[in-house]
Image (cartoon, rainbow, N blue to C red; front, side, top):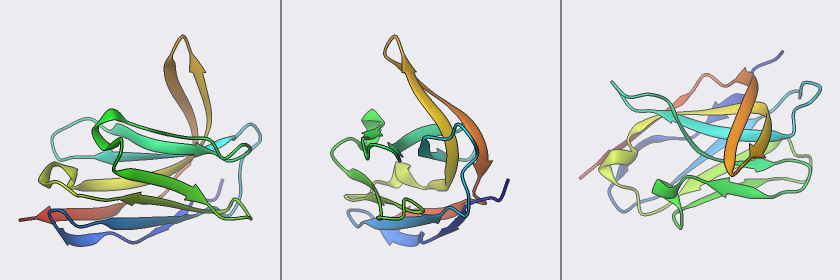
Length: 125
């Protein structure tokens, strides 16, 4: 499985915005979404949001709701995550992941096929 290629990120002031890109070379059989995760040092990886590539439906975690947008282009191989009104606690390494996503009893899950290498977002005051 070829890993997605990520770009974007960097140093951003609080209140600013960041737009991360994820280029998917191939999807595995069963993949139906691209999910974004982030890892803050000394914390577990957490889901940020994602997009169902077949329908375009998106979802986002509560901590970025109202501040984030996940989108895809017509090829469904260029995926973007934009987060606005950045906070210090948004500093993290962000990963895009091709996956098979589902929701069961209100709980979202993703079985990952391939992870991008991650891109650092550092928010400073």
